[in-house]
Every structure is written in structure tokens, then in C-alpha cells.
Image 1: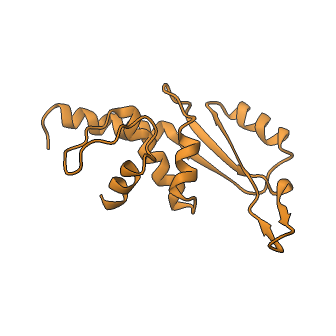
Image 2: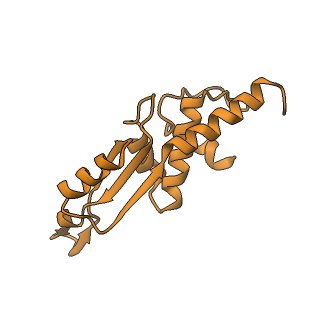
Image 3: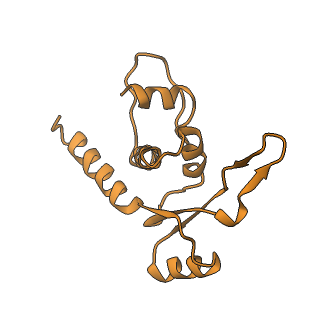
Length: 137
């Protein structure tokens, strides 16, 4: 819960207003789904600010999946620091496997990517909302 409170207080949950400290926060299904996606992205090593900026671009109704690609072709050498800067992340939301294939072909078969199953996360949040609404707490 501490991590979630930190994300909220730092404004890293897209669409959620920062309320008074110590008060209960109510999450709608859309916001809860966005929190779940951020949590998944932080599990693979993205920082919360970067994950939140990706999720800020997701709009309900959500596509089924979110594809995150590390674009290794765009890695740069920082001449001042003398080290490589991390390559940029590209992200695409999509619903069909045909679209995934098109994206992969467009990116010349990326070697490093992650797919987040947004549809399953949203279903879990809807189920949690139904349980909450029916008073099973």
C-alpha cells in the first residue's frame, strides 16, 4: 500500500486527483486498471514515472494488449559522459495478433519486447469492483 500511496501523492496515477492524506481513496475500474498496468511495468524494471507516462496514453475502452519495445537501433552514446544512454521505449496498444505482426514487421523484428495483457487486468479490476459493490468485503 505504501507504493500505491507514493504513486498517488506524486501524481503518477493518470487521471487520479491527489486527495487529502489519510482519507480513503476510491478507484474506478479504469483507474484501477491503469494502476495494475503500472505495477506490471515496474515489475520488469521500469521506473514508476516512466510507466505512468506510458499508461497516461491509454484510454478506455482499453485495447486488449500493450506492447512495449526497447528500440535497440536507437541506442546512443553520450559523448560527454562516455557511456551509452538507454535506448528509447516504444509502445503500442493493440487488440489483434495481426496488428502485432504488422508492428513487429514495421520494427524489423525487435529482439526485446514485453506484452502486457491489459484485457485480463481490466477483467480482474471489474471483478473486484463487482465484489465491492455487492458488499462482499
